Length: 341
Image 1 (cartoon, rainbow, N blue to C red):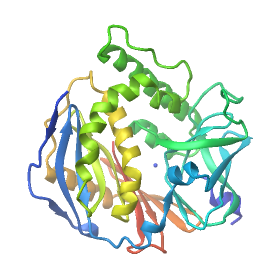
Image 2 (cartoon, rainbow, N blue to C red; image 1 turned 90 degrees about the vertical axis):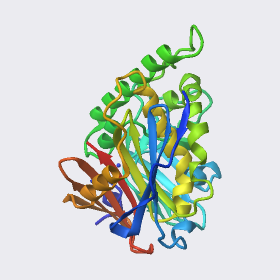
Image 3 (cartoon, rainbow, N blue to C red; image 1 turned 45 degrees about the horizontal axis):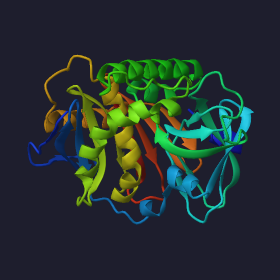
Image 4 (cartoon, one colour; image 1 turned 180 degrees about the vertical axis):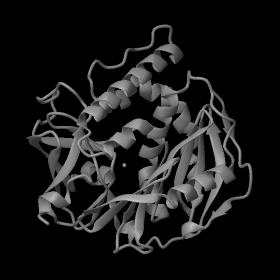
């Protein structure tokens, strides 16, 4: 297989309550605690005791780009970029990571471990911005400056995992932006809240002042629920009482590195759904456990090799699971992404 094909896609008031003792999850010795709730967003923490040693050595894409250890370059092709790791550390890239800049903001479509001193390699992407094909402001058009956001909204997450789904991704970005614009207009504290930016970019919507201000309370109240818990390796969240999706990692270290962006993404989706009628009663620990087990038992529908990783898609009538395995990591799998249909 040539290198190019290896990288193609085949991912209010605070009410904090611990309702019951953590439940054991048979697979991988995980257990669940929670829910921890702010307004219409409830989070269940996933605990585990897998070894941290190898996974703790990975940088996240956000960290690596922020310190200029990884460079992402524009290629002039919407669905393919070029990426280079200039550091001596491996870098973990997750499906749903957004890179800002270039000629259009992009979302990376698959989990990947970018090896140390990788040289330039192709990496698959979808555009999460329509219309622009020039530099934006003072940003260079030939490369991307940051990766501090991951895609929000379950439907957009699912679209990012599909092959040849560029039009679907654009449609889901438009739907997400519309939902956010309607919600911040209705719930803004000021009589005339600032408008959403006119840009079509998902990134620009996520970092816009109306959205940042409106999600601040969620993040303030929930960001510290993992403090002092060195065995937390993931989370599942519910919006309006309905379980939405979640992510589990090989180690507490890797989860903590991803947690700020994951929480921001979850809070953004909850914000967009705030004005809608609440769903079912709050799910309990047994329900969360059952859904995770259902996903783990799902039928394998595809498998993709991406560098040293393999990404397996498992599907059941209720759930989707994308399981990323790395033979270099203790316990083999490094990331599980759960989506409830």
